[in-house]
Length: 375
Ligand SMILES: Nc1ncnc2c1ncn2[C@@H]1O[C@H](COP(=O)(O)OP(=O)(O)OP(=O)(O)O)[C@@H](O)[C@H]1O
Ligand SMILES: CC(=O)N[C@H]1[C@@H]2OC[C@@H](O2)[C@@H](O)[C@@H]1O[C@H](C)C(=O)O
Image (cartoon, rainbow, N blue to C red; front, side, top):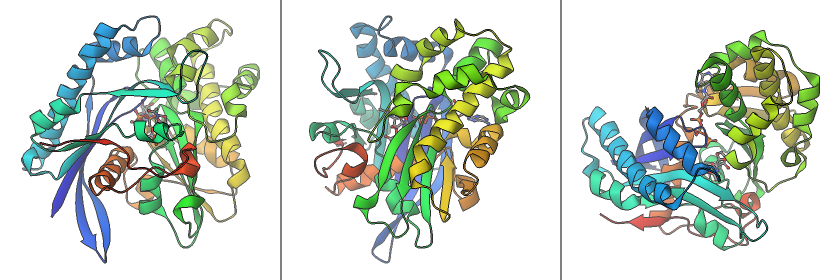
């Protein structure tokens, strides 16, 4: 039996997601099964360091240099911890697959800057602490062949979710929302994937601003609010929402600064803010998916946004012809999905097989993603 750990620390900055995955060979296919999952929350101090490093105004090279090592240490400790919880030594793992923390993502050239992306969390430290081989830095190679370096989960969604009976759309709602469209009986080249816009990022920012809380648990604040149509219209006119794919976005577009500017423009009760931006997330998803929806479509929602009931209700009402499910309805885990995807990508890399999906990222060809740090 082979085991691996997938690590994901996404755009919502809630902490390090770690998934322990068992890999079996069944009928010539690898079967990936989740054994355990945990999120190790970032301390307030670490969260501050990360948000500072992401901000053009606050960031500096000393901070990013140190953070690369600090995060590598925390990632390594997360691997040891999830293994210990399962009475295993991390040295028994076949590998660790680490996404890293995105510090900046510039998917297309801008002014003097070329298309580029930066994920940190030094793999050498993870390898030393966990005493095993680490696969990391999955985005760069795709960009080296003209892709946007994101989204990278489509390969794993094709492998794990392709259905003979229906088209499936995997809608992840983390900090940012991204969708992978897997048509019925699809081949890999039939996949389409793109970011649809913000996920929980704006909602979280407003919950911190008004309630000093990290997120809108179950969507309970949004449930009590009323929609401000003027704000909603302004949000839906954002240039990213108008763009067609391949397209990717991040904190650069919908983070702290975006929310701070919005807050100066409208004056209304907290819950109206939260309901309006929650509806914006739902409408941005519905608008991006509209051209692809069929009567046979299953929309499978994953990421922390699966637990926001008001958001799910809004998605159902925006796309009435679609069956809206969450990962748990398929017996899977919404929160573990991306960390599991890292394991699938890492496994491809170790086997010298490509795992980018050019129709999703815009790359000119399929390439082997990632770098390997051998132990
Ligand atoms: N019980 C809950 N109710 C409502 N929202 C929740 C709940 N639990 C988590 N969330 C939301 O999910 C977010 C975390 O989601 P997730 O871990 O999927 O994001 P991420 O992986 O960091 O981001 P991305 O996928 O964009 O990189 C939290 O910040 C919060 O907004
Ligand atoms: C550059 C970057 O870190 N992008 C993330 C982010 O979070 C969600 C969305 O934006 C997605 O495009 C991507 O992550 C997933 C894992 C992906 O690449 O498929």
